[in-house]
Length: 118
Image 1 (cartoon, one colour):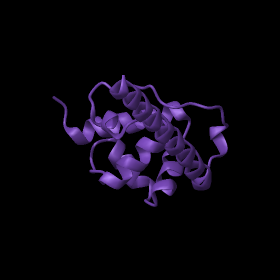
Image 2 (cartoon, one colour):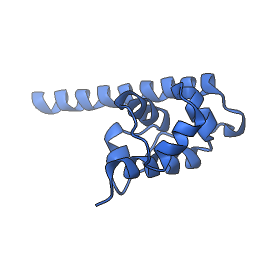
Image 3 (cartoon, rainbow, N blue to C red):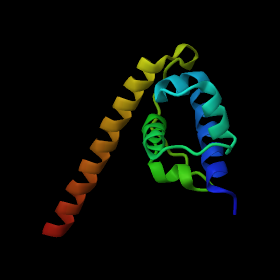
Image 4 (cartoon, one colour):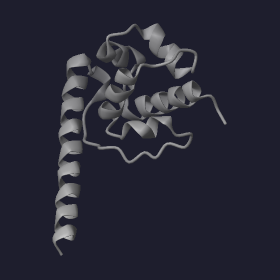
């Protein structure tokens, strides 16, 4: 089994590249320097739980997915031009993803409530 830091780093790198983000833009979004992001992606540096949560929301996936060796990528997607993203754009994407997560949660609660009353 791979080291947890290495798994998380690989997953972050994979999702970052699929999303078209640079290490620099992700670093600015997390308020860290780019060299730290590089080390995290290589599994050389641990990541805080807050940073892990923020990245999961940004990528539109549950946080625990970043911890799995084989990542299940069913993230929220919408079209945008990633080449000129700055930290404010990433904050906006994150806020939208958080709204979608909350909506999904409310729908599950509603379905559960319907089943409980049947």
